Each structure stands twice: as structure tokens, then as C-alpha cells.
Image: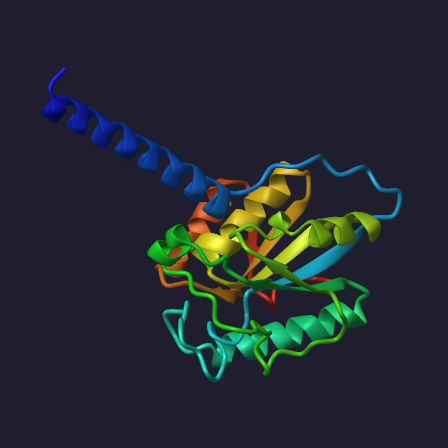
Length: 216
């Protein structure tokens, strides 16, 4: 075998491994997780999940905005929902995106931005604050365990980005047997929101506005 053939073969093998590794990394980072189905609780509860409304995305010092429009209206709507959820005895959970520092994440556009904190304008009413390093919030085991411990079987999702993190979390929840509702006026995305919301409906996920949501 000639040296040229050997070199071309090595290049091909290395390229094949690189592609396989990239696909595996992409799948593990950006696709919905799978997990055990939740039990049938005798007195199930509900939870409002606030996804990725954090400094650096929507905050006053945003460096990597993920919304196509200013987030002020989103912040106000989410705060009203938090107040209503607290009054109705609905669990409120906060999720932050904390990217791992690796080549594939940076290639996708993710950046570690120091200490990742919730947008300072968001009402924080408890310590249910969890970090994830994938699009699906169920990649955070403490978050999933909290829902199990509190016997939650229904989730209301708000936040950013509707086309990715909210969508992946919704799919991860469905796979585990949760009922899922997305609040149409409490999510944002770089992509056209009506088209994104239609994707939720096609997967059997309820989509309503905050005014249509009945928490009591």
C-alpha cells in the first residue's frame, strides 16, 4: 500500500470519528432526554417552570440575546404568572442554562459567561433554582427529583428559547408522562413564534395564553 493511500485512509478514519463524535455530542446536548415514567400520584401537584430567563440572555447586560424582540413584556408576564402560581399553591421552579466549555458547544454558539444568574427583574420566591448544561431541563437530576418529591404531574413552561430549550424540555416531560402546557405570551424565540408554537401543538402539547390559564 502506497504512502498516499495510507495517508488518505487515515484522514478518512479521523474524519469519520470526528463526525460521529460531533453527532453524539449534538444529540446528547440538544435533544430531549429520556427517563422513567412518573407514578400516578394520589394528590398530584402542578409546577410553573421558568426556563433560561437569565442575565446574558434577557438581562440588562445581555451579551447573547435569544429573543427576537425586547424581553420587557416577557418579564412582566412571567412575573404575573409567578405571583398567580404562588397564590394558587403551584410549585415555581427556575432553570438556568450553564454551558459546558467545549468545542462543540462553542461551535453551536453557547458561551460560558461567568456566574450565570437569573435575570434580576424576575421575581424569585424560593430556592428552586437549578442549572442545566443541555437544552432539556430534565438533564438536571435535582430538578427532576424535585418534581418527583413534590409529586408533580403537570407542568407550565415559560421562558426562552421556545424553539430549543422550552421545546426539548416539553418533549422530555411528555416522555415521562407529564401533562405539559406552554404559555404562548410567556415564551420567546429567535425563530417565528407562531410556527414554533404550532410545533408544540403537533406534538400534543397544550398552548394557551396567560389570560386563558386557570390555576385554581
